[in-house]
Length: 260
Picture 1 (spheres, one colour):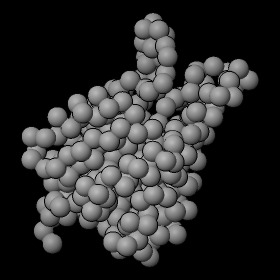
Picture 2 (cartoon, helix red, strand yellow):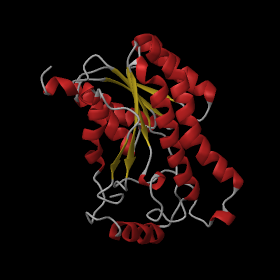
Picture 3 (cartoon, helix red, strand yellow):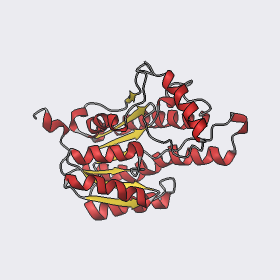
Picture 4 (cartoon, one colour):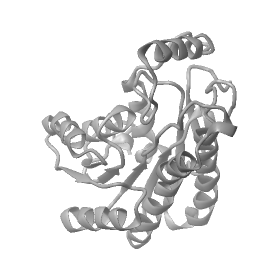
């Protein structure tokens, strides 16, 4: 196999949750660029359609599916529609995630805690639960979850107790699942991004508060800058493709040195 072919995703079907914006959109673009057919899920159908318009010029099949991936029936319908349309799922990106309100832990509302757990962690379970039987029949698959440096190290994401807990939980869940399915040809890994230049979903801050937080975080990054959204594309293709065929159960931080 030539070096370039290791990254070739031609004839593979990729399902990306929360692909309508931010890092999820970058995943969709990267996968399409390297040959995959892309199913872009988002809770906001208009954002998913925007992503699909961006990837269409690559000439591969593309589909949008609106669904709240924290709901089992919607996840099951999403996966069923993907199978009805394409017949298989080769790559799954569990990317849906939101930030908790930035308040002290003792002031965090229980309903806010529950919603962050549902979107960040439960959605990963539901999506993997629905897709794994398909990959088992295929005898091959790659699952990548979007964790965070907040799930590895505290201190760089002030007051993100719930967010950090769910992102750490995603890593633990990923590792256990990776070991369970390693002999079935299914590889399961995680990407832990630092702060990319995208708007955190669910984070409600004034412009002044947002700028203050961004400057504070930026000072803590050894490389001295935020990542451009596109800088996550190479890692996404690597983990989705045969270039990472002997890698499973691992976390890849892309954070400018924060977790070094």
